[in-house]
Image (tube, rainbow, N blue to C red):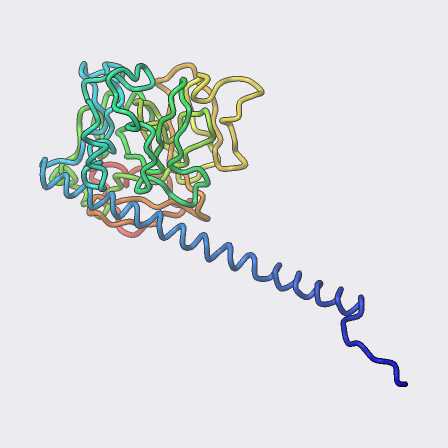
Length: 315
């Protein structure tokens, strides 16, 4: 009788096939990651476009862009501290129920939650999240309260918190108790940045947390060019950028460098993103542009000013 032959792979053939599959995966993985990031970047850009539409719809109603930050006394800490331009845009980004739960007479919920409707300040709002930021829009636990964050912040006057509070000319789109009107933008709405991307930081630091009027929470400046290696200057405080070896907020490897500063007048942050090579910015006319990290600093700062007389051409 003839012995019955069985077909199959030898061990060497199996190892060769596995090696070929591994090579193919290694070749395809970067392409897949790039495609995913391209989709995330497109979504991030679309979010800014929606904010641009919301800004202009608000302007049509109020004849001005939203107030940058509210203070009853005019000073930065006059209370209630938390009302920010994004809160005023809630009805225009399909968040009317959340807006109706906001009580502008109440102090910030990190001070006291008394009187606040449940799930008002920790609701995750997709329109305020950039998917490229791994934790964009995630709620953070700040002083015992879980509160939502945003990857999009408005440009405030000046280069630091003290200058934002003074809101002197040349002005940016937003200030204390002030929002720009289109007629104020004499440099041209297509040449003026009003909102840009920012990273929300790690758990426990305040960046992207738009419930208090400080740099990184509500205030953003054109102090440095996008994704600058120069660290953000944040308050030396446990929920901002505290001094010490255990300072997890200082995270330069993830484009989140910060230095602590006990003088809050010096605090500033500038736009940051996870995109390669720059950040998306929203212009006064509602258009969204991608600005390179290599943009000239003078040009960049001029773009954040409404009426300094420096009309920018190409950038």
